[in-house]
Image (cartoon, each protein chain N blue to C red):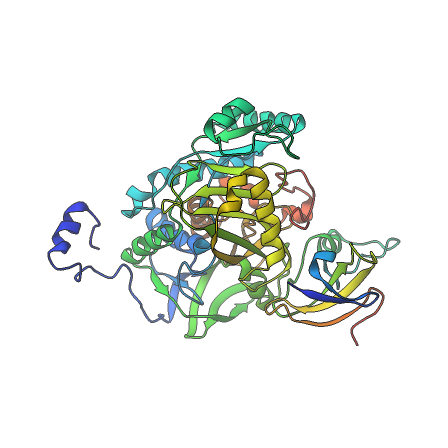
Length: 418
Length: 89
C-alpha cells in the first residue's frame, strides 16, 4: 500500500496526482471466508480492521448493500466524547478516546480529530447538581471533567443567550475538555483502506438475502452476489438490524427510528467547542468549513426513510435559537436523516447470540459515531475469541431479560420516545 | 408533515399527535403465570417492521383518544386509521 506522506504528495504532484493507488479494491466475493461482517459502515470497517490487525484474521469480507460509509457514519454530527456516568459506558468510551487520539497515525489517514471539548449546559440548580455528580463519576474513571460556573461558560461561549429573563437561563455547565469532533468520512475511508491492505475484501452493492443456519450454527450467508460459506458472521447494520434479525427469526430489543441533522451556511469562526442544550435535545458545533452543525431529537415514530420531516427540525432549531439567538440569522444549507437502531435502555449491544457463530453489534442510538473504534475493537475481540471482552461485558443482549439494564439517563425503558 | 385522519375528528397534522409505538404488542394476562421471556417480549422486544406497520398514536392536542394507524415505515404512507378497539379487517 502506498503510504500517505508529504513526500508522496510532492512526488505525485509531478504527475498531476493521476497515479495514486486506489484506496481499496473492488473484489468479487469468494466462495468461502473465515469471517463475514455485514455492514460496511464505520463499525463494520473498524471491526474488519481490528480482526486483521489485533487477531491476524484476514480472510474476511465486509458485505455492504450500498456503498461504504453511505449510512450513519456519513450522516452524523461527528461528536466524540466519553462523558458517561456509568462504569460500563465510561470505560468503554474512554478506551475509544485513546484509539481516537492515535487514529490518524494508526491508519495513516488524517481523520482530523479535533479535541475541542464538549460543554453540556445546565439550566437549573438541580441540573448543576446532576452534572457535578456525573463529573465526579467521570473523574473517578480517569476521564477529564470540569464543572463550569455561569461566568466561566460565558467566557467560553459568549454568543449563547446570557440575558436574565430567558425561559432557560444558563446556570453553568459540565465540560469534557478532551472530547471533540473528527472528519466522519475519513474515519470510514481510513479503516477501509487499511483493512483492504491487510487482505479484507470490501464488497459493495451486495445485499444479504438470507442466512444458512443448521443445528443452531451459522453455515453461510446468501447474498445478491452469490452464496458464501462462513462459520462466523458479525452483524453490524445499525438501522437495518431488525430487518436482518427477522431473517434469522430473532426479535430484538431494538427499534429503528429516524434522526435528522443539519448544517447552516458557512460563517466565520464563532464556536470552537461542541455545546449541548440542557433543557431539551440540541447539540451544535462548527465545522472546519464554517458551517454550524446541528442535531437533536428523533422524528419520533418508527422509520426507515433516511429522510426527515419538518416538524422535528423546527422543534430542534427552536431549541437552538433559544440557546444561541444568532442562529436565527443563518440560512440552512443542508438537512439529512439517518436510521438509528434505538435500543430499549439507550445503551448498545455487542454480544454473541443463541446462534453459534452469529455476533451482534447494534443499539447505538444517538452515539454510534464516537463509539466507532472501541466498538470495532471489542466486536473484533468478541468474534475472534468467541467471548466478550470485559469492556463490552455490560453491553450484553441478555441484560433486558435479566433486568441488568444500562440506563445511563435513569429514565427507564424507551427513553427516546417523546 | 404527516397528515393523520383521526377516526373521531378527521384529518389533522402530525403536530397534534403523539406516538405510542407498535400496536400489535399484547400485555400478558395478569392472572396467568408467565415466563421472563414472555415479559421480555412484551416490554422490550420489537419487530420494528420495514414496510406496513400497525401503530398507536394519541390525538393529544385534539380529542385525546388513542387510535391505531397503519403506516408504511419507508414511504410514510398512511393506509388506514381506526379507533383503538378496532382491528384491521
